Image (cartoon, rainbow, N blue to C red):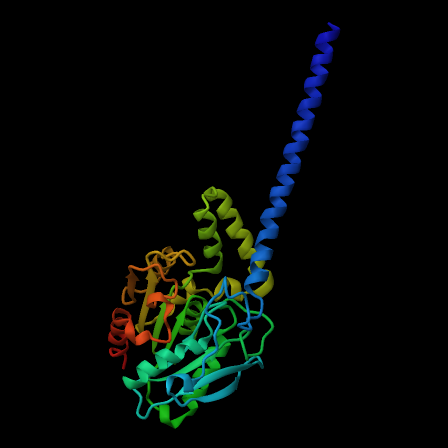
Length: 325
């Protein structure tokens, strides 16, 4: 009888220990699930100086118009919320359109798009390279992941509209990665923009978190919880814009204008699934191209400087541009 009592007491003790251990594990998991999004958002929003780790972000060069045989007008524009943003204008007489270029969250510098400016100037297009807030020479102590950079694009659009040389000239916004998100959000909210090209663009920032976790075979329900927690943290950091100023919402506002979405089949940074989500919300008139490639930045071997050598890419872009009037 005594031995049975001792055994029962031992069992109770072990059950309590197991419960305590499980409770501690649960608390640790909850803390991790809340802390990880904070770390991700903190890292993603740090100001970009293009002096980062070249091993992780190799496209760290800063180019000048002269490197491409171009003349450019560098300028500082003031946004509606009072920030100064750097822009560089490459003009050509009687342009078919003026293209605003936007780049990714960490790389490359928007100056890599001087390669596009050179190529398209030969085809009759003007361009303006925009360094959005939190990047390079522009004001802003943090990157805003596409939620607030629409004000930066609006400053460029206002500049264009004030120039007689651009009277009746179509405005096109062309962005890659986070720049693609900024492009879509700008297109959805600024009616004066006539055309959109968005490459390797996330549907929502939290979707990237979800997709990345799933790629590590983390159970879907955990990924879903983490996605929701990330969304909450984004709202804390960016306010209502985190809910409303998202590509998957703004893509609905194409309103008959020309739009082209591009993704790579093998992109592991922003999965092509993001383009699929966007297309489900976009009007049927929205064009798309899923390129058989591993390059996140779409251009072959990320060779922005010699973009003209990527004939498939150039033909796709030019074909789209020539249909915008």
